[in-house]
Image 1 (tube, rainbow, N blue to C red):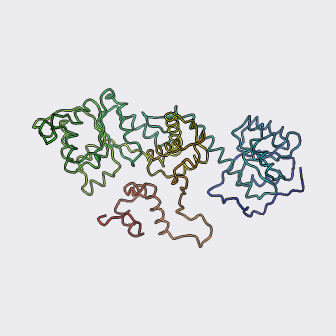
Image 2 (cartoon, helix red, strand yellow):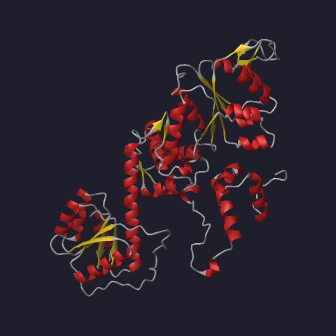
Image 3 (cartoon, helix red, strand yellow):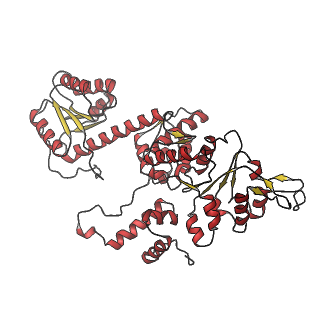
Length: 482
């Protein structure tokens, strides 16, 4: 090899190399080169940065090393005695395709780049290269491998992952949820399921029903916000013939239709205030009076209600009856937002991908690393429902076997996490505590999709305190009566 070529260690940024963000990702690196001086410089520098470094001066010795242990990345010179770096790269690509290989060459031409890529190299560096450039390539390679391993693991575990009914999840918040559901499902206790819109509250209700002794009887669901107030009473309690203009026959209400099973009252926070006393009486007496009738009809139905509202706050402001709240909220089950579920995002994405690809007949089998990183970075204000919508769109647009970044919605492709605290060592860039507080409140409101009850809970405020701070900092979204 050309020993006159020297590695540049100026530490200055290289044109075209993007700045690094966040913390470094030290890992294990195998360096293969017969230039002892260069190897010593590389090993010393990387070790100082927290990397675990092993060096070999022939490809044959490197293969022996690879046979006995795992590495996050291999860095090899193209021209080494015996087996070349390109040949070593080909061997690694066949036997250890999970390990990215970075080829170093003093002959930085398009032909060299093509040779490197054909050999299975993940990236290549032409000499001389900057210290920062090598670190950047290593970080990308290690992050790539880490994401690849996680994607592979999640894809293989979709069918066997921990679940409760149709609810998938292996994150700590979901394990806690499954444990609670397992304890309360086979009881007769009323359950209030809370959580943001799109988190899967109806799936929770259905899973509770399927795990209960009532599983062979009906599961009946009604969205209290979707039925006009004038019809909701009849829908719930039934009516007799002639009770109103269109009542041409007797009709059983949902309480009676669900008898022996479970009645799911979705969006219970939107129950009209005038109807709440009748609902309370029905729950207390286990009887309903159909509209237009003077007779009570008994029912044997378990009640599961759900809401994305803060019912405690609704009680405080007079929008929901306190006695009904306590009757429904015997056991509260809070479904965590998707952003709090870590790798469940990719787990669910692969589950949706598998089902959608099968239904559409498209040969889409996975998610590319870059797309997976976008999915993991996004805040998901619409939660699981938004993720499902995203994957349906991605499968429909996919042109390759893997979902790529261009298949994702624009707001997910372009999403960037805002910095509450400036990532700068320059005193001129630093801000006051008031500005930090303002940015953080805005960030929390952004993540929860403007849900002030949820934002107040995260911030540790009551709603009045949140409104006061929003007014103080000029944050939009506070109405006059608030």
